[in-house]
Image (cartoon, rainbow over all chains, first blue to last red; front, side, top):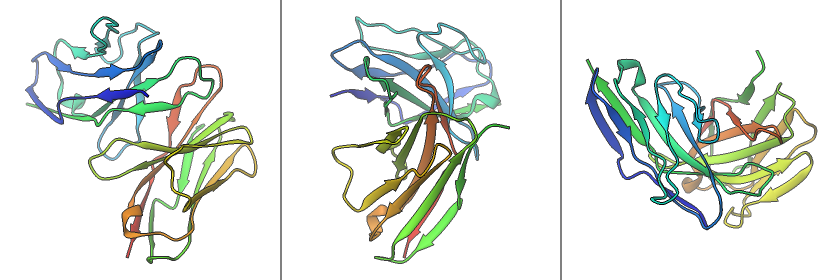
Length: 111
Length: 112
């Protein structure tokens, strides 16, 4: 069975500081990893996926299979980054895109 | 705009009184999902449809049922809601190629 762990329920940083949201996973096969974000009063939306290897809103995430991690990073946090962030895993080989979510991290960026 | 719509946004029902939550999409996606999200917890998949093919998660209670009469609509039926079923219910869609999931705004269910 797959599992996603986000060890920090709450994370606070000041504007302009680097931020890293941790995500570790457990899965025996080859996973796809995602970060979803939910801003206040908005719907859950995809932020980025590891296979795209892209930077969205200044965020990047690298899949480290050796450490089974997919940490989300941004070098200079902005106030508008304050939101709930979920790491999610899709088991490889399934065609339906079923996701297993972590518990989420609430990021607060102070001015 | 193409999107995922959930109605109602807030639903109050009584203990044991059947309730139906609705989801519609204009994205023409093959796959539709229902998640349950309790306070301060991760979304938990209840079931999903690939076209008309229904897939129930092993730990989804029998009290929860779903219907998908066509590509655009999907319903979540809770036959006899208990106090423990109070939660946010999220509908999501995905196409069968990218698997990127698009979420609706959710329906917050209160059971009195």
